[in-house]
Image (cartoon, rainbow, N blue to C red; front, side, top):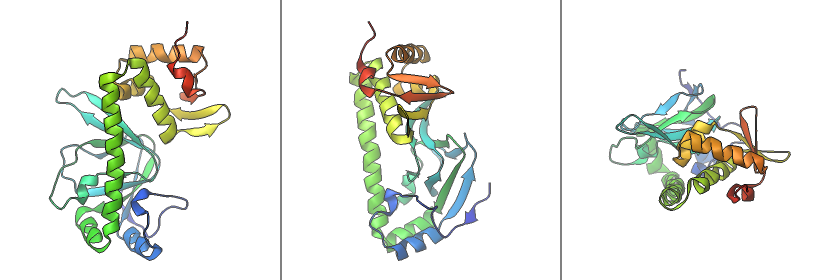
Length: 230
């Protein structure tokens, strides 16, 4: 869909990108953006393509992914409202996107082109500082994920994926935290086979750690994810 001018963030949206910034400055930054609406499963950015835009997710859900040389798609970090995509656009040296990103649900994003973004950073250095803090958080996630891949069992990795997704995209409901994710998505995020993911999820349903219903997962007891069913 075509982008349109925008002068304000949606009501109630908070983003770490704007922490510590004065309302007057935010109005200028907002006015420099355009709004883009994308359907679910739309690609936002492509790895290896020039980083010409910064995206701020204002509604919906997205996630990073990486495509290997063999064409295998690996799911990475899930993104909720307020998170940014395409941080390489902040760099003074023209660069490429390191990862691809796609919408998981119908979504809305604020978009700044690189030239506009660089001009805003020169005027409001706090914008770049906030972006670096967000990038640091993403690096912490990557380190934890890499350690899990090299040191943890399939059970531990999948359990951590479930807990992480509950914290990022889950909604509190009676009995726990609910979110939507398929077995294939969970398997990719935990770097295990879909068969192993299905086996563990079935086991966790037996011990009531989770409940699967209507294409969603209800996380009832994170502690029980680490217990084996005897």
